[in-house]
Length: 91
Picture 1: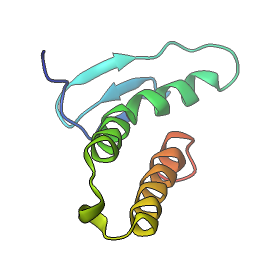
Picture 2: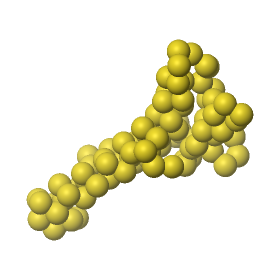
Picture 3: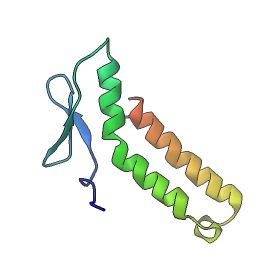
Picture 4: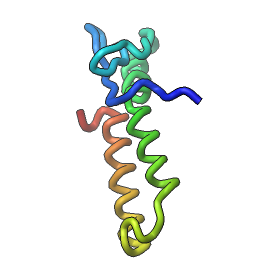
């Protein structure tokens, strides 16, 4: 299986329609209804971070974070951060 282009990815361009890493254009989101295209671009740009968070969650053992409560809090923090970035609440 091929590896994906390394992150972080971000939106760029005069209308924010390109998804890029530091070096390359990864994808282009076409303008569509209202600001829907901006939300789509942010969501795509967050793909590497979402994938990384899922890898951590899928491979985590209890000893990694201590108690089940500590583990749950860590996962919730990771999820909140990714969701905030994907929805544009945090740059």
